[in-house]
Image: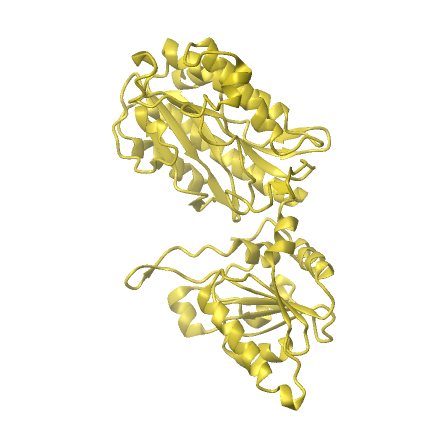
Length: 439
């Protein structure tokens, strides 16, 4: 599948990274390895997110090398050679020539020659940027290349004196999304929104949780998103109170809610949507009361996503609404300030209100700078996902509330004026949900 990000943008990312690197340095980044599923069957290949961000190159057994100031080209890719016999079995390979022509690399070599070529590129560079500890086998190869250089010190070779985690530079870049990235994420959000709508309509026919999961996957693939961004959560009834429930095998029961947390991955970018709705198409009074609290909390949190506010502002806004709602419904007692200070809400709301979103569903980027929450800036993408979960065995509340789990989640990008919701095509008010399910 052709990337929705241009070759020019990938080149600009590499240039920006090299501009941040120290003088006389080199960066080395391996592609994701293939993973065995069972015996001789492999898991579907998914490129390493950092490698994808800098190259758009979707093959395993590849290594990107960035060498600022190199006379024969600063951007080098080692990759598999073209092989007609192998391609007959496993499909097209780009090859070194294609890496230059199609992916904008300055230079490229067969991956089989890396042991002979790369030590010479490292030699004379004082600092190596590398994802330390991410891949033990590749760590050993890097050390072997350094040992080759060290063995030639008496002949005048200069081994690097410092290794630095590449993530310190790269992950801060990834935190700020370009207009092209936002466009991909918005498209992923639209596909996922349609999938959620179709799952809502399917729920009225009953069946099992996996019937709704099938509806999601079908819609994703129908629109060119070949995989989920994470294992889909389809929790009916009390299963909605299990935050990472992925068994998705229980029957759908009339009178229960269904919590679906699911999103597709498009061009390696994640979407992440949660909606909660009644199997029957109509909310009960207790379900409606809790749902309105969560929805109001989400609106308050989204309103707090704007430049100048810090990362924790949306969470604080949601927490106040959720806690006051619990007090108003008699699930908590005392004052709002005391309930928040004592964390009395924790049995009902035990997670934070969002996370960074991008090439990873829990995307890279620091949430604090030093000891202070990070300030929100245009281009940052995050989820907003408050929830309330009344455990089925919670004897401290009236039985009518037990087993109700509700979460509402949307994908949001910070803009100059405030924020843009990328996943607004799926209903979330009670009236909208009931109308859709009745259609």
